Length: 413
Image (tube, rainbow, N blue to C red; front, side, top):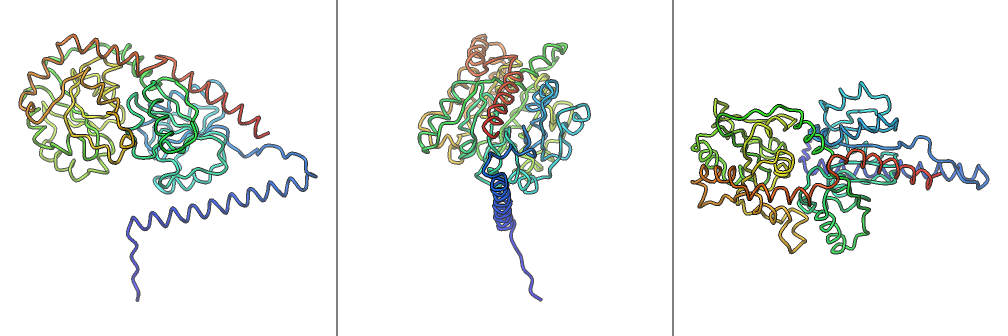
């Protein structure tokens, strides 16, 4: 008996090829049907496709409901038909949709199963915060008119993995620095200019509103939040147990909130650290889908280049420290750009850098960051540049989507 084995990487590639073939067949059949209708109508213009969905929102993980929830709420309030597709079976959207009249929320499967549906989608607009469209398994459907990317952080557009937004038609941004990075990458790669709209950050608007209605509780003991990114340049990957040891030596309360991607991409490393440092009175691991409680509890954040730095700085108006994790541009769009990524230009103005040499002096550094007034002034300056349209992002996003839908519908009529 012959036993055949296909490794996961090859299997994924073959599945992607199969999806592409099926997509071509479906597109061919749709195109042929339109031509037949055109002939039968005597050459008259065929009416728009009644099966075409108006607005589709795709979320690859439940953690992005803080971005899409306010948008779905507002679209439903305005009576705009829309479809929210999620790759998380426990996405909060699935519960929220019970109250919607015009927005339908649906779990479309995980991984390749989700992408197979998206690759054959028939819609006017697709809105997503997922990078890598037309680069990996997720391909542009030939029956989708317009792909719109919305950022989920006010930091660098260029800190996406390579070609992260190349094949979107439009970007919804929060600051000029993101637009500048986009235009430079387009010029280097000979890409057509995407439509850019400055809408702000609706999830930060929601965090700000939530914070304003939350009673302030002062910690008896200083609380430090360690919130690293994932990958080879992340704090936990580079320093691991030695960094946690230094934090414990400060005598302060410590909350460790790894990047959600770490739990899948760096599982062995995290499992080892969580076993060595179990939860106790002074140290806890946070895996909440909603980061609000962890951010509101902390007096200071330590990170590297994670986008959550700006949530903490801009909304909670608290100081940060960042580790010198020797950021490597190699896998990111930033590799194409000669200048230092905007995030790393800003960090020295708003917080204190931790180096190998200074790591043993964490307590004094933390105390200085909390009490030094110059960091407060720098936070205010960054907020003015990176967070446009404070309080108005959700309305701006919905205005954009509805106006764009109207334009596309007229073109398709």
